[in-house]
Length: 630
Image 1 (cartoon, helix red, strand yellow):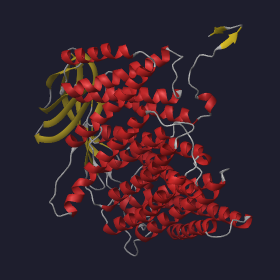
Image 2 (tube, helix red, strand yellow):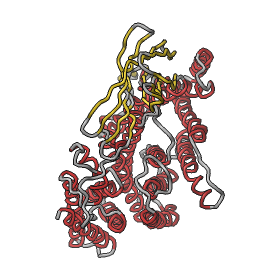
Image 3 (spheres, helix red, strand yellow):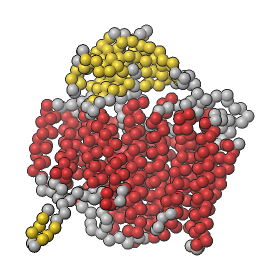
Image 4 (tube, helix red, strand yellow):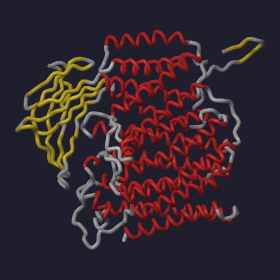
């Protein structure tokens, strides 16, 4: 009965979303019609929430007569993962996205701006209604398996049975939903023609979206690093790219919205970026869920679902882009021209996003054109994106240093970076020099701003964000260029010494043991880590887990974290009795990568605070009888 009630509520929510859009956009603007639209929006949101709760109830009670529950749960699954399994696959993740979008309707309903209450509410309600209709037609999570009800579910994918599933997808979906609301504001501004009236709301939603996308991408990279067992944190997978491109576009949008009085050019670019950023979310959804790309992250392979998502993307983006081309020149906006450095930074962000999009779609376009199959891997993305990222960091540091009259500091900074690379060249001396020079230069520029308070800077939040970028670049550069890695055949009481960036470390394989857990049984290796050959640091226990429900094998890496370096060990196949393949990595400064990513979050939160909490630090001057006191 719960499934049928959830299905009925989803149908009612879809109808009420369309009713909200109709009342706002087609009926006369009277108080009665406005109250009716608000009532329909509230009722639709409550219906979606109740539908989501009913699906969660089906998971918790192990209702395997519901196909979605039978495909993604099991009676032995822990309760926390049963709750998270609701969004662990295609249908439930769309329902979670729909729920967040429904909640954002309340933002527009309670807005003090008329253009957001009317045009914004109507546009977002129309999108949510179309989104819900796509769900009902191709991704209904309440479909029954009657009369052949399985006695047990297939279980949640073992790779997903991690805390990353609990946090990573909701964060990304919240970012995507906020970009949907941002899209509604952009279209509402184009219909109204007054940019300044909604500038604050546009900036606020951009910051919130950037916050959730930053958290989602950083957590996804950490999840890949700790769970997949290959020792990397970014694979340039099409699905990873689909989440990264909206972050880059939102970052560019935030920089467009930095001036309090943006010029007409920046205002028009802001609206275009808002539309394109939302379009990149829909494109990523299509790539992830249509089966057109092969990925460990992909949800499903269904041509019908992909076609409907592609149709939804076309119906939302094409009218918006047509409206932009027709109305953008008529925007009422007055402001000073943007600085050249700001425009160059935005251009580099857009170039990075476009290069990643091209590398992701190029194999698909070649295949559709009958030119054969090819793959675009990490070498392409590293050769294109990494130089653009380092150029952005150098541009920020040069802009700050030149602006405050301390350009002479650039020379010793470059010389010290070059000397470091001569002494410690890394795997690629060119990339090592660029990464260290860019990161240290940006840190040097920001340090000047702290020690010279009279130097003006946009906000403390922006300063923290730039420091976070510098720390992340330094961590990514050192971990990739100075990593020590070995793939070894190891058996009991066999050791191997590796030379790391901070000394020699020995790994001794002691024994192999069998672990029995409720959901899986595992083969675990006890590997002792020594500094040198005498000082024991810790014992690492990598595992190969075999899940009872479906027989799937998963590698569980063992990681010893430190501020200066991580020791990463994963257990491979058994080559012969008692002999295993073991991957060992020493990753210097990898923790700085996560530290930089985490620092982005307080920067975004601080930027969302009232202005009195995020003012730049400056000297206050007073004048008394012609004397200036500081």
